[in-house]
Length: 199
Image 1: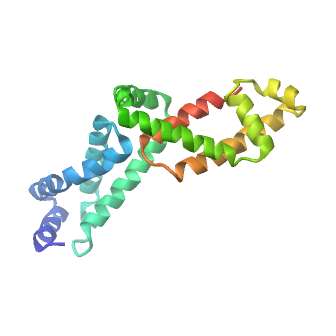
Image 2 (image 1 turned 60 degrees about the vertical axis):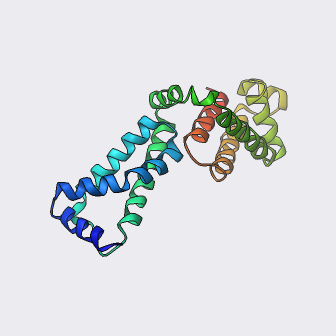
Image 3 (image 1 turned 180 degrees about the vertical axis):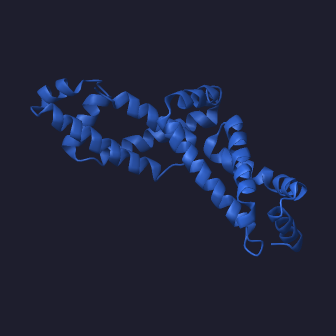
């Protein structure tokens, strides 16, 4: 950390808005790029960045100038981004908003390539499931059969089919999230989850 930044942080602790704005302008480009890598939607990335700096202002008195401010800032940003990704996954309205914002991007050749890579990863994840679970998953997802129909076809109970699907989705989610990052795979998995849901 430079002497100039340490001085800025000391002023920030004391509530100096000019020091705050200077730090914001200094870190804005790199943080915005970092967030955009995960979110892919400029408007959401911008909002997330603003929220991160609001948080910095709120905790300014606890910032320690002698420690790495850059590391602290990126840690707060990473945590905020992960919370936002979870929120997008759980919130149907927000997910729809993001997907609409990504509509033009999905027509882009690079994004289409990513989508194909996610499809390939999905096939890998399915292939690693136990045989019976894999069969249940394929019947429900690829043939769009209900739990009752699969239960009759395989000679098992509906609850067993449901249990296989729950465990399959957990396995696929773990495989998927450990091999990808960002909002696109989150949306891809969310779509998969909706496709495989049965009452």
